[in-house]
Amino acid sequence: MVIEVGGRPKAFLKAMIEIVDRPHPKWTVVRAPKGVPRASLGDPYGVCPSCGERAKLPRKAKRLKCPSCKWEFEVAWDEGYLT
Image (cartoon, rainbow, N blue to C red; front, top):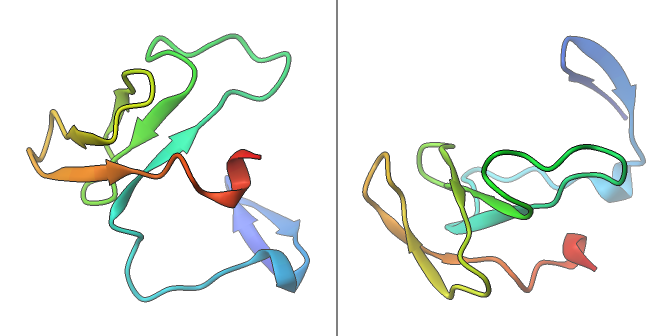
């Protein structure tokens, strides 16, 4: 399967892609790749499932309120992509 990422086509295995109608109602936990300087938000940081705003993640926070849209969601620390 080929998907456009950053304006360029990128090949992915179909088994690695999940297409959903709505985003997961949890904060996505994002870790900087090895060799990339840590973001000013910290490493890891969170991405709000409602508005896409990025925010600092307090260590092992269970829930977090978005500083932008003010909605509160669980943090997806248990997602498989973090292992």
